[in-house]
Image 1 (cartoon, one colour):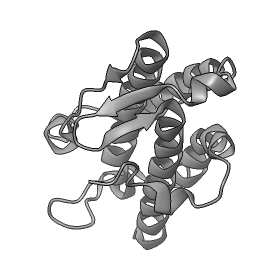
Image 2: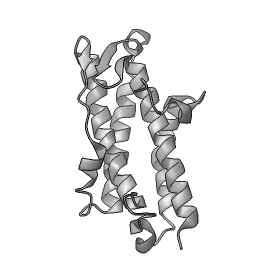
Image 3: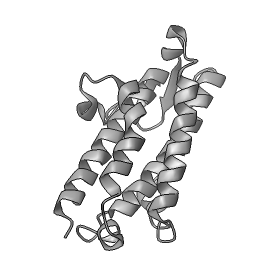
Image 4: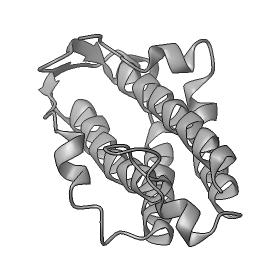
Length: 161
């Protein structure tokens, strides 16, 4: 497994700029859509716009913990999770709540990132499935993950009836 499977989405973009603009982009993509459009699954086993937003809220909390543990512990080992198992419980989550949680957690993480020094960027952490990485790899993964899901949302919003 790749160290950062989302690097191809980030390319040479500044990860902090991506992280800073994602919440606003999410809102602008979803605001004009109806409830039916937000809840429509594009295909069996594929997430709806609402489910993607719930996933982004969940993952932001995961990244929150990973960032803080990497800064707090010597060579922290992150805990992987199965996103599809988590998604099985997305039925009660509405879009507004998912966006609110994502935005609050993201803002909290961005504030943390203002405290990161150059030495902090190189702090090691290990993902059991991906290998040893740095704190900055986590930041770049977050940004690439955002871009991946924003592209999905753009496609879904463009094809919404």
